[in-house]
Length: 164
Image 1 (cartoon, rainbow, N blue to C red):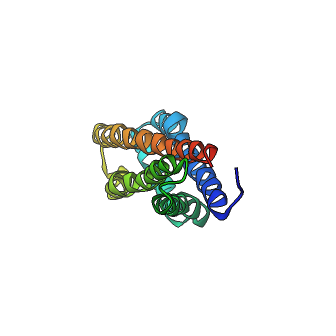
Image 2: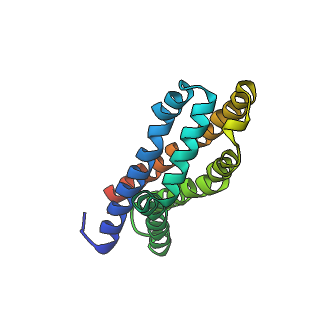
Image 3: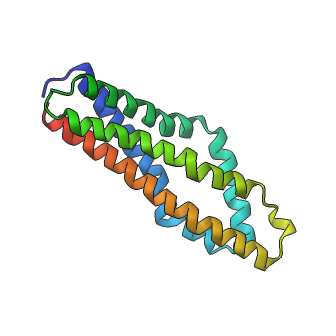
């Protein structure tokens, strides 16, 4: 493998995509179940707090959305160099990296915004349970998808590098 700027870009994009997927994987594997065990009112309150911090965390935002930008750059580079060995893997990996961010923006963020509009203190336990379970099941399903998509992006970009 020739260490070129494209190779370095692809390595950094793959690592960043894997890191972003790792962050979301935490929620898929245990954080959401842990929140669910606290009861619906506390779970809603805690998740709203997590979302508020995530929306202002430069470290999170730079890694998460930086992964998508880097993946897009890999995809564009792979398209330009489509006759190079491994470029199709890199192109699809780049697309998956962007798709993970699109899923976040199109599905998870609107669910977070809806939850942010819920006043857990103004709900009965039954109402809070309905709100939380609706959020939990849908949000977690989309989180699984964006996590798998991010990991797939990293793997595909690294496979593409094997051919360079």
